[in-house]
Length: 150
Image (cartoon, rainbow, N blue to C red):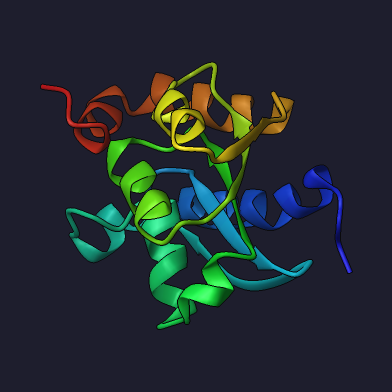
């Protein structure tokens, strides 16, 4: 079973690549419980014409309904620092640990997560950085739309 943060991040990166290849925003996520990946997802706002299907929310949707006791043992692994919406979902379900691939291209709700007792690990992963830098350079309008910028 994958157990290190870097090994777990590989699942989220694979999802980010899938989103990029589908013409969407290259952000992926994985929900890990007791060392096992229970769900993955990627940003599908473009693909589904959705307002809310970011990587983390898509992953949670793909996990389906889970008991609170499961979320209490979970780790959300995401390629990019979670936005306010995804931060809120992590807090709502009381997920105690978040592994972030990178926060150079976007710094989201990490401070709020930490302030609310969530253990946040930032890996500063070169592939995650490159995926986002390439995407932002190619699609600045779509990126601004995704993070709610005019």
